[in-house]
Length: 185
Image (tube, rainbow, N blue to C red):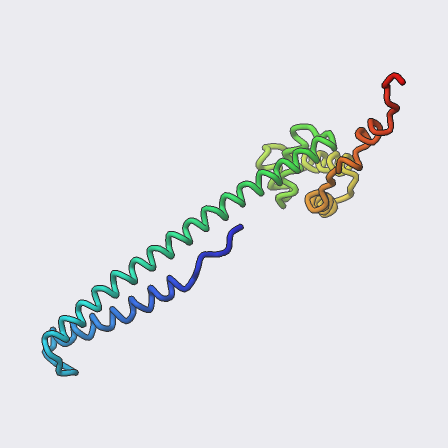
C-alpha cells in the first residue's frame, strides 16, 4: 500500500481558516458595535477583509484537497479489504473441499468460524440445535479436530502457512528430470 497522504495540508488549512475567522470576527465586531479596538485606516481595514477572504479560500482548498486524498486512501483500503476477504473465502472453500464437507456442513462450518452459537446457527438455518451439533461433530471429525477453537486454529494455521510448491520441490518435475533420455545414440 502507498504511504498515507501528507497530513500537513489539513492542519495548515485549518490554521489558515482559524486566522481568517479571527480576522473576520474582529472586523465584524468593529462594524456592528462601532467600537474599534485598533484605530486603522480604511485601506488597512480593506486589506484585513481581503486577507480574511483569501485565507478562507486557501484554507478551503487545502481542506478539500486533504479530504480528497483521504477519500481516495479510504477507497484503496476498502478495495484491499474486499480482495483479502475474497482470498480468505477462497482459502476456506479450498479447505472445505479437502475435508469433503457437504453443502450444509460448509454453511455450518462457515457460521461456526464466524463465531455464531449453535442456537444462532440453528435459527438462521431453520433447523434444530441438535442437527447443528451433529453437523459440527461431522465437521470436527472430517477436519481432525475436537472443538470449535481447534477448528478455527486449524483454519488460521492454513491461512498463515500456505504451502507453496517450488519447481525444484515439485515431485513431477523431479521425475521428469531424472527420466532417462530417449535419444538414440
